[in-house]
Amino acid sequence: MRHALILVLCLAMTPLAAQQTGTPEDIEEGVDLLSEGARRLLRGLMGEVEPQMQEMAEALKEWNFNGIGIDDLGQYHPPEKLPNGDIIIRRKTPLDVPMDDEIEI
Image (tube, rainbow, N blue to C red; front, side, top):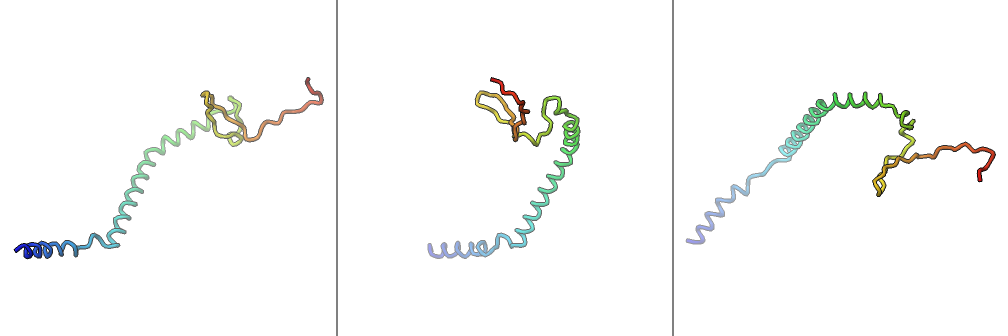
C-alpha cells in the first residue's frame, strides 16, 4: 500500500516537471517590455526636469565669474576641501608673475 501511494504521488508530479517555465522568445519579450518601460519612465522624468534645467542654464550664463576673479573655469582644478575645513581652488598652471630687473632683498 505504501509503495502504491509513493507511485501515485510521483505520477501526479510528472506533469508539473514537464511544464516549461518559459521559452526564450517569452523571456526576450519580457526584457523588451522592461526596457521600453524604463525608456518611457526616463523620458517622462526628463520632460519634467527639462524646464528647470533650462532656467538653471540661463542663470549660470548670467553669473559673473569675473567679479570673483575667475576668468575661465577650464584653468582651474576641482575644489578641494582641506582637513581644517577650508576649500581651495587651485590653478592648473600658475600665474606668470612679471619679473622686474631688480631683485628685492
